[in-house]
Amino acid sequence: MKSVKITVIKKVEHKDLITQYENYIEEPCKLNIGDSFIIKNIDDFPQGMCVSAYMSLYPFIMNLLYNGNDIYNGWMKNKNQAIVSCNDGFRPVSFLLEVIEE
Image 1 (cartoon, rainbow, N blue to C red):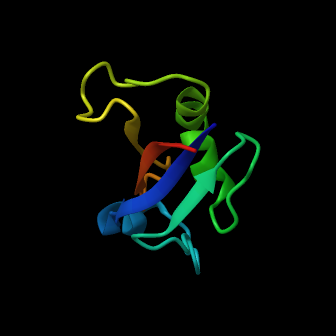
Image 2 (cartoon, one colour):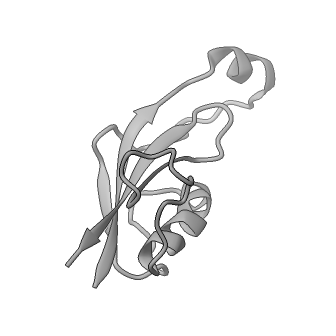
């Protein structure tokens, strides 16, 4: 059985865009580098992850869970991994997705 491990590997903050365009948000993202989640079923929503981030990852997780690999046609050194970022243009978070065989 396959699972997909999601690990936060990078967080970026575009202060210039935030200053120019964003309304104040007290806690935009609670994830930290190194946080990880295991997905065994595509409908298992990870506690602590925002819905928007999970929806950005969803098609890639689905592909990896259900026998897909090499999502980027050779870009990744490991065909059972993918790097995907959430769709927050102000504070994107990058995630490493990796297949775990159980």
